Amino acid sequence: MTNRPKTFDVVVSAVIRSGPRVLLNRREGQDFWFLPGGPVTLGESAKAALHRDILDELGLEAKVADLVAVVENAYELDGEAHHEINLAFEARVDKTRATTQVPGLEFRWFDTEACYDLDIRPPSLAHVVRYGPERARLPLHSHGLSR
Image (cartoon, rainbow, N blue to C red; front, side, top):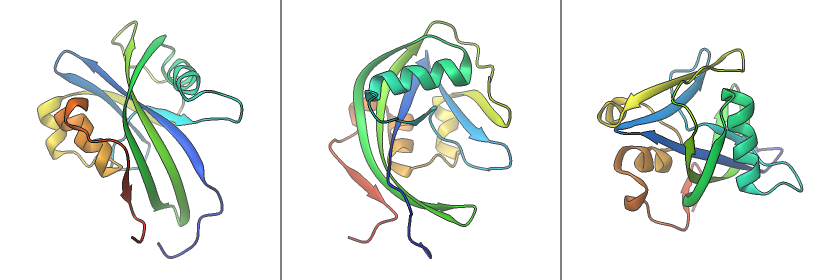
């Protein structure tokens, strides 16, 4: 990273599967994919934040289940440095339609095998998407940070 992050965020992500498919999203103009989710606000539990994000972004009720991965991630996006802890949970939704409620945010279902060819970030969560939560190893994976 060329500049220093100004904030440290706790974010949550959802591994949402429907049969052999997994739900991913990306922002308009980006060529990489990531799991649905977003930041945790002060005073909010991680599971409540994920439930809220899925409802706000997709209009879907979600049942947030087990924690499957914890990732420390540092990255630069649009010239701004970021540092976060990402808590990934398995989740189920009440419907499998993936219609965004947020302009500029695209959601798409992918067959798990197609995920091997996608740029999914952060890389440790790509591992969870491709191989399943049972192959993830807790507690912590770091990306973009000096050792």
